[in-house]
Image (cartoon, rainbow, N blue to C red; front, side):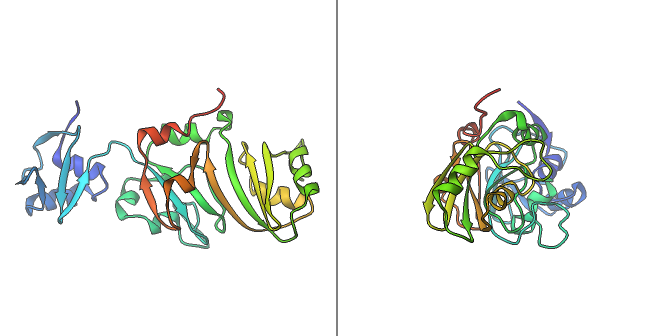
Length: 240
């Protein structure tokens, strides 16, 4: 059981600075179990804690794990340079909680993106040693052919790589769409592999990470959801 003062609880949940949180408490804006709490020093058990602020219910979460259906023209960065950053399309409390993307998607790539404020989770999910498969669907400039699939499965040589890179699996969806499964996370990997195989990617979407699929989350572009422990378990590595 963890007990924290009310101002620390509000700050940890991304409500704002500690000073601002104390102001809210002094102004009788915080309700717990139907009772106004106006003493910021009161210590509360955080397990199962729910508080109401501005008529909105907040569930205490020690750490946050979310899945986002990333739209195009959004940068996976807290300090974007050419396009809006991913935090700009999420609630403000996530900025205060210093939510970070787990890995990156190019600004024009859409699909499943994980985010968290748990540094250990981010490090573990980003480690190349985890061998977690990621599934991408690419829209190609030229028609998909059996030869293209065979090349991607056999391995293609990229300019700055010492050895050819190959897809874990690859299949044609239709004439202009191909599904590619990778375990690596090289820079622009899918796009560069398609170019090396003689085609060109005109659109790209990540549809799954491990056993977690975008379809199972039922998220429209720009939508997000909290992940349950059971859903996070779908991200477990296949090998140590």
